[in-house]
Image 1 (cartoon, protein in one colour):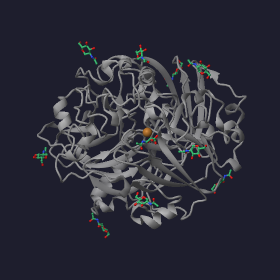
Image 2 (cartoon, helix red, strand yellow):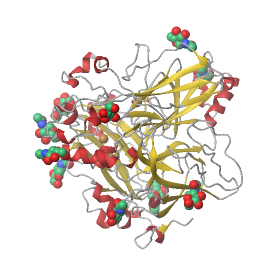
Image 3 (cartoon, helix red, strand yellow):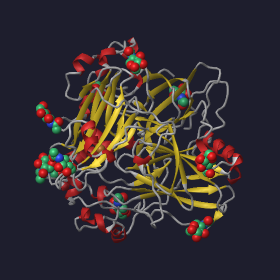
Image 4 (cartoon, rainbow, N blue to C red):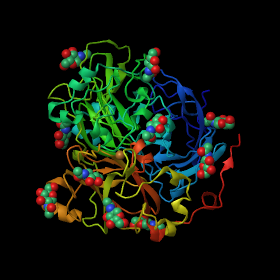
Length: 610
Ligand SMILES: *[C@@H]1O[C@H](CO)[C@@H](O)[C@H](O)[C@H]1NC(C)=O
Ligand SMILES: *[C@@H]1O[C@H](CO)[C@@H](O)[C@H](O)[C@H]1NC(C)=O
Ligand SMILES: *[C@@H]1O[C@H](CO)[C@@H](O)[C@H](O)[C@H]1NC(C)=O
Ligand SMILES: *[C@@H]1O[C@H](CO)[C@@H](O)[C@H](O)[C@H]1NC(C)=O
Ligand SMILES: *[C@@H]1O[C@H](CO)[C@@H](O)[C@H](O)[C@H]1NC(C)=O
Ligand SMILES: *[C@@H]1O[C@H](CO)[C@@H](O)[C@H](O)[C@H]1NC(C)=O
Ligand SMILES: *[C@@H]1O[C@H](CO)[C@@H](O)[C@H](O)[C@H]1NC(C)=O
Ligand SMILES: *[C@@H]1O[C@H](CO)[C@@H](O)[C@H](O)[C@H]1NC(C)=O
Ligand SMILES: *[C@@H]1O[C@H](CO)[C@@H](O)[C@H](O)[C@H]1NC(C)=O
Ligand SMILES: *[C@@H]1O[C@H](CO)[C@@H](O)[C@H](O)[C@H]1NC(C)=O
Ligand SMILES: [Cu+2]
């Protein structure tokens, strides 16, 4: 079943080339005032890495079809839930200005979409670049409910390419590439369903730290490696994290590793051996991105849709010029490899000036939790097999000292913007596990548990929502600082958390190792100015803390409250979110919007009408 996304009659979005896995052409009516999309969700058998299981499909595809929009468009997405599960669809990075009820978070902005029901989200997109849509219900991202979004820019700044070249011919080719990005969703995949994984995690009290494969645009293989080879990849300086153990043949840290699984009491007999220890390699199809070297350049937009892995990506023999991050242009920076954190988007230019050949793309998990990689190919048109060299190995480690990887904290906005130099409010959140290996908290005390998904949405009643310890109420047009402080001691080690703020981008003011033992950013700046940028900091909707492997770490963000509504702030590692690592920001409680009747308590989801 290959169904096209609902199209209006006029105009075809032909200027945009899309990943090879995407089967349907997406069109949108230039003359219609609103672009309409229809997403039919089904639960069917699939085998993205060669092993069959039940999974979500969107319009018969995995990943779902790309939703191609133009900056300024009014968008209407109809979600039809043909699955046996409750669900919702969130549009990651879309600001939802004036439409907080279309943000797709159960218990926060809407009720679940029950089986057989339909939900229509309406919003306007005054932004550009790569985004994605995904389920925001339980662990359904791990079951495949996601697809890319690309918003074509109204215009591209004329001087964006100047740091790359001043040759006008090359610049023209670069802008052509930027106008037609290839979308690459990098994800991880699991042979057990998210529900099965969660049940094991709870009954064994473990953290889900092991994937079965890494996928590029929904394609990949199960790769198995010699445990000794994997173990030898870990640099001597950090080898202590292994506690003298070897990775398993699946590339996982053994369950007995207390840095990974904590010193809490576990019940490992509840864990099936396939989850951490067994590996049967497959030979299923891998993604091929075909490029035409006569165009000179290609643009690859990486969309981080992994659930527990943080893939570092690289293409043999090719540098990547990163020029757009989370929907904002940045000063292009040339790297050999970059880590695509869960939820983040990074668009890169690749010069097609090598021998016409086929060049492997490597996406290798960068965390200690697992040594695992997925592969694809960048294939020049009529390319033949050539001798190539990788910049990173299977363990995500640079193959030589000349390899440059992206430094997130050094990202410079192409159009710098200065935040207010003083916040109106500061919240210091101690983030980490509470009581259990699988249970997480964003405020140190409370878990945003899955049961809350069934609760009355906070959006409907901000006064009573504000009484919940799982909300933070802010006033409109104020500046808010949030400082995340990661506890880290031998019994409760933490990975870096890819945090996501719904609705708006935030200024990432600074990060550091050690205890944040100040009460405000201003005090910390006095002590450690080198850790902060208050002049032109990176603006992100997804921002990753440093890990707390050898002690505490912290991150400070600042944002301007501009769009009243209930918006989640959460970790984008799926088992951390379902383990409770979230809070709802009640942004602008003093200027709360009137909820349209169909999205409020008396609205009801229509049954699907064919
Ligand atoms: C979604 O399903 C409905 C009902 O079967 C069908 O009429 C419609 O064409 C489908 N839409 C897409 C985009 O597949
Ligand atoms: C292009 O010209 C600008 C202005 O003269 C200069 O700053 C920049 O370095 C040049 N770019 C390259 C790649 O040479
Ligand atoms: C451990 O898990 C197994 C399998 O789920 C279960 O049968 C057993 O009762 C559990 N033991 C404890 C102490 O919870
Ligand atoms: C791998 O294959 C063996 C033998 O066919 C089977 O017993 C085992 O369950 C498989 N493991 C996984 C993880 O698929
Ligand atoms: C790739 O790079 C390696 C190392 O620089 C070089 O030996 C090889 O010839 C290159 N391959 C191609 C096809 O350019
Ligand atoms: C937990 O809650 C108590 C009282 O409600 C508060 O004093 C304490 O600071 C909180 N701890 C953290 C880590 O947020
Ligand atoms: C969907 O959610 C409703 C209300 O929270 C609940 O009663 C129902 O059991 C859920 N259905 C499924 C299939 O999980
Ligand atoms: C480690 O951190 C946890 C959670 O913050 C805390 O409860 C525990 O006391 C700490 N242990 C040590 C040895 O500091
Ligand atoms: C704050 O922490 C820093 C290092 O993290 C330490 O050097 C300093 O002594 C601490 N200050 C106080 C007042 O605890
Ligand atoms: C909230 O504040 C923003 C920024 O000042 C402003 O543009 C917006 O109109 C305000 N919204 C409401 C509902 O007052
Ligand atoms: Cu997390």
